[in-house]
Length: 231
Image 1: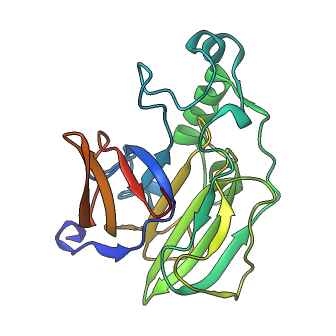
Image 2 (image 1 turned 180 degrees about the horizontal axis):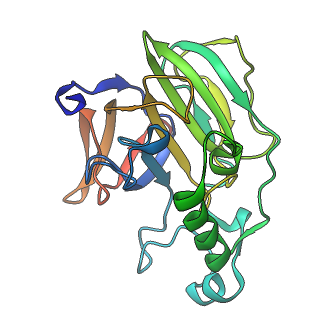
């Protein structure tokens, strides 16, 4: 049983404060499916912790619902993404265009279509993953960093990278409701057939009872206000 496997420990792939609305710390499968290696996957966004509803964008809720939101109005858009481990780049796919703004109905339609009709045997994986990087972190352990900003990927196939190196930026490419980083560990470099692997982060902080508390080898929940690195 894969559930019995101890989580693989990697470094948190972002800096600053984040929220994980989809996380194996709250439910498994975290994205409601085992397909495409997503069983233990995380999504990370930045939000305004002082505003009702914790919006991920600077504009009003009405503008979001009626007109959509330009990507640069999202707090996390363009934030740097860091290598979660020492490893080698085995896939690096850039050039998939992002829509210029989010659109609730269109994005929901795309998500439904990909969830129900995507066929990995004939459909382009970039229609789901957008711009993405896959790193080999160890023996049969691969990290996927997905939905990256178009033109932001700074690594190429075969490149050896060190943990903590900047490798790309958070974007909105592929099957994405809003700018975010999708992060997962897998047993294969082929997203279309990979199985997800459980993953925890070697350290980060959680804001509890008015102060930041250190967490070691932790798996955040969808309620945790987390931060790591540069504050």
